[in-house]
Structures are given as structure tokens and as C-alpha cells.
Image (cartoon, rainbow, N blue to C red; front, side, top):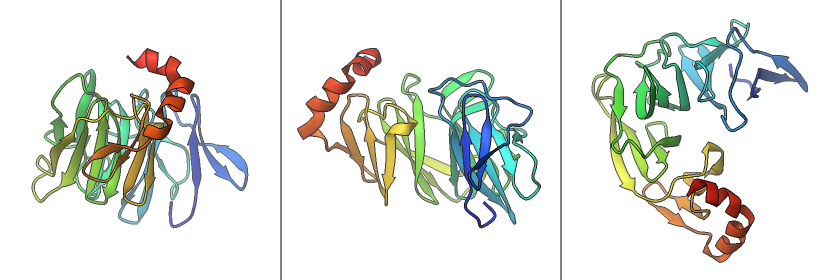
Length: 231
């Protein structure tokens, strides 16, 4: 943020900045009420010379913090009520798996270019299969990202057009999705994730391939109670 390293963390009840080993409370008017499995997701969105930290926990109103002006986190104006995942793609803020006049687990909305509070009415997409919920999305580069869903992976890519046609969506494959947003690890342009079938998958930008077969039985034995709850 502002050219400097910052550590910002979210808990079930607060948002903090770690300043030389001290936790500074940045919680604003909206006090977080998420559960322990409502993971915070953070992105840094640059608007002109201002860097804004945008945060979401899939429960409360999307939050924004502007370090240049100080203060605390605040509700992001005009944004969806809540979102499970956030992205910065082609200088637009993207919210996925949102609450927007009701829970929309396959809906994606995005802002105008370089404008975190400008959410055009037509800048929205609804992915097919209402039962295949969005879990998390991660950048491949500044113009494309992979969307991990319960039962499939999709590519979201920026394209020339209006706000409404700013992105195209491509269904890549039907591999099992990650257990949660916390189960996806980027390494260079490769993603590794622990999937719902308790195997580790490698996503290379096009395909998800299981790579943990030699230890699958060990992992399954260790996590089998979790597997039972997911089936």
C-alpha cells in the first residue's frame, strides 16, 4: 500500500493493521460478524495515486480502507451487499459469489475502470449451473483469472468493449473444486489446490490434473471425517 509493505488481517470481529509488531484496530462502523470459516479476502485497488485496500468476508458489507487519508475501514459505496471473492482484473474491481437482492452464488459483478464505487448496472454475469457455486478466483495475470467452483473451473478474461462486455467467460473443465479459498496456493503461474475429493490438483491455466495419487490414501484417512461431511 502506498509503495510500502503492510500487513492487514481480519478476524471474526475486527480488522487490524500490524504496525511494527503492534495490532492497530481498523474496524469501522460495520463490525464483522462472520464465522471462523468465513475467510477474509483482500485486494489492493489503485485509483489514480490512491491505493485502497478492499476486503470481504462473505458475510458483511464489502469494506474499503484508504491509508492515505487514514481512519478505519468503511462500507464500500454502491458495492454488492457481500461477496465471497474479490479480484482486480484489467483495472476493474470484481466481486464474485455475491449477495445482491438475495444470495447469488454464481453471479459476478464488476466496476467501471479505476472506479471502486462505480458499479454499472449491466456489468454482471451469471455462470451456468446454479448448483455449481463459486468458491474463489485467482489471477493468472492482470487480464485473466481462473474461477474455481464446486464442480468446475472457468476462465475470466478481459476484452475490449463496454462495461457490460468487459469480460468473456470460458468453461475449462469439470474437475472437483477446492475445499475452500484457503486451499488454493499459487506458485508462479501454476495453482495447486486440495480438492473436495481430497486429492491435490495442479492447475496450469487450462487443465486441472490430480498430482497426489501416491499419498491420496494417507490424506483421505487423515481427513475422511471432513470428506463425509462434503458428500
